[in-house]
Length: 624
Image (cartoon, rainbow, N blue to C red; front, side, top):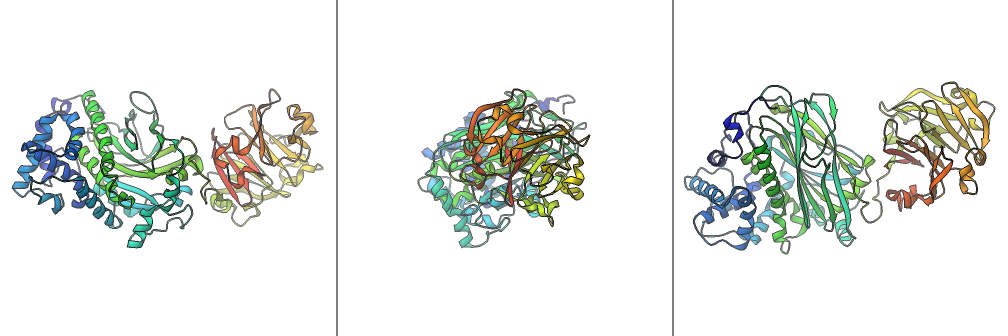
């Protein structure tokens, strides 16, 4: 929020002397010196990367000859601040250490002679040691990727509390194979578990896979509790992201979302300059990508501060590639150590660079090929990330991230299609948890769907997860169908595109258009060939497996039979783009049971992109 800009605020991120004083205070374990900032809890071992960087800066200030690796470590920040200031920071560190006031680095750093440079091999060894401690680090969460597949929460209350205390949280995923462990089963805490996590047997196979385009986008956020602007006035939230993988690095800062209030959902307009919603968009050729996301509440920022912030982000992205220097000596099992030190380094940079903007929380994620595949097959291709700083008075937000890239190579992971009984919990105890005949989003409703089985049906509220008015016979609830073949054993059903009252019901080679408001059939029972002339001569004139209104369309319907489907335009009475296999048109279903003989399908009520597909006792939510 801008209510006027003082000279100090305008120069908060750009004044060298202020930055040096801020750094001096942080090194000695004090508050950074800006009113309202909270004291971060620190783990000396996790601060190794920052200590090694400062050690190199101090050696540079002393005029000692730097190694190639040390020069590579210092170069990114020299691009932001210049060589003179980087050396001045090293001088501050040297002075602080000489007076024994440095309180935040491990002994391997704090007691090392400045005549002795650190090497990449030593840094790798320290990463290994930090990685061994990861199981006991409260702000590091190891999550079985089956939780991601199931759309389950990726945090525990203990992790949320620790992430706030440290100022950052790191989430990594484990599980040797998709579905190999129960969702929520934690294997941290033993040497064997650490080896299992790190070995990544599924990654060995994935590493031989072909490159694919991986893309992550902002999909909006929810404010559970506002941050409480220190400057008075309204909360304005923005997000920054730093992402990196082999041959790729990217930084972005979103536009501000103004006047954010608790209990509301908000869209994210994308990058403040380009409008792009993508914060990671790369040709994925390696086995790992790293993403660091920070939530901010704008205070009295200036254009100069935003420019400086962008430079700091660029530097942070380069910091993430520290592991590249040691790829030849660094086994995969030390991923956790590198990730912890890298995100801690970024958190330190934020503390050093930021002005009066309220930093809410930083979250880091290391995503492998298997993790991106799990996200691809997750319902809606979305994951929810928590930024909870309630106890510090900085608010509570949940961020939605959406995968919009290509299908990762290889078969669908086990467990990517959920049981109806667990995904539609209001159906438990009924006959509708398996073997559905048909499904249909209720015309004109943003919440409800009809499910049909035998001579029964239910109207199900997808938001409240409950059946409305119990299980009923089709004859009772659809009285206009009495005396017809449509009172039991339907083949398919779907809402009429563009209508708020009508639905199509199919059985054998017949169909009806039914008005749910007037409870009557429009124009009688007809053959599919007669009423859908564009289907003549195809397999779709009888015995359909499923039908589904195309989300967002006022004219088109999907019809499924066997391993084939068509998109049919009801206005023009023609098939769009011919008859295709389900695998070709719905690539996420390739090599799954849903690529053939579906049992039911319907558009997700109130959604313009997603559909539900059902088969046996399972279903999938598919984003078109």
